[in-house]
Length: 131
Image (tube, rainbow, N blue to C red):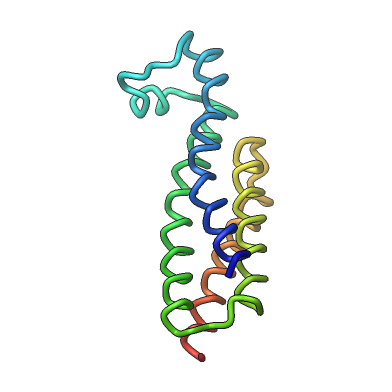
């Protein structure tokens, strides 16, 4: 279960990693980091800064699906040392890659890493359904 929990923790931290990664872009592009209205400011970002912001938003969305799949697997008593752990590790790697490709503006690899991450969440759901 430890591998799954570590992957879950990594997924929880990813949106915050991308939020902090946006600080240099906010400073460079907009002159300062607006802590009073960070979401309004984020919408003004361009290029890599916009990519980091998009990665943060998408990380929250993907985390919700992964958490639901993980809960379903846990409720069904799925073996956490088997394919569930493998799918979780692949999910975390794919989600990190997704953020990098979003920031670097590599759309094809971004979409592929998104699909891989989503596929791993769906695989966990299927394993739970078949357990």
